[in-house]
Length: 278
Image (cartoon, rainbow, N blue to C red; front, top):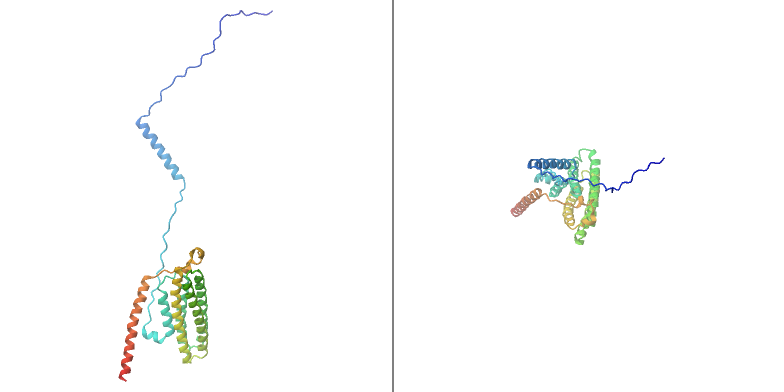
């Protein structure tokens, strides 16, 4: 049996949406604002401290090392040991520049030191038989260092953009090469005949010419280094062409030269007076 529900005339209405009441936003008090700002600042500081920073540190250029003081020889010692005097004169000339970053200055100082050592061996030549071999070996060392020096100067000349300065330096290089070979030959002749005075004069003259030419080589190299093309030279040549004046030693060398001239003039006046008396 089926049950029939009674029909209702009532109309069903849709459900009403829920009413959302707006709540007022509370305004923070000054104390709450200060606390919030303090917490934000601490958070920023912590983040900055945790982030690694890469600061660029510019290191100052290292100062040049202080060079040993070089004093000229007394007049009596210079006249007694001409080869030593030539080496000391070369040291005084090279001391006008800093040599810690300059291969040319360094090698000139080595040659000057070996010339003083050659003078000491020469003084023992007649009394010590071993000195003959040592003298030949020392002259060979001077030639080897000079050849290395000339190679550096040729490289410097190739970097020079001034044709006149370039040819001037190359001409000095050729002359110095000839004199270094001549010194080696004359030294061998002297070692074979220690009591030959004529060979002594040739040896002293060769040592003096070698010193004067090497002094000129330094001046020509400095002049050529000013007109070098650094764009094509690269970093390898920078150590060669960097000539930095040692102002203190330059003034000392100038004062020594000024004192040397009056002494020479006085000696010349004395010799003229003796000649007139005779």
